[in-house]
Image (cartoon, rainbow, N blue to C red; front, top):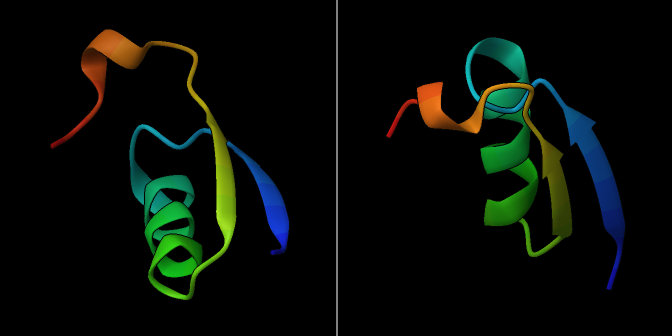
Amino acid sequence: MNTILITGASSGIGRATAFYFVKRGWNVIAGMRSPENKQS
């Protein structure tokens, strides 16, 4: 299984990129500066 690290994953392009790789079966490590502000 491939693994990717994505920073800025709480919104915008980082969030979209995280979902892109999750849907394709990758193991995603998603970093967020303010996880309490993440979008659902």
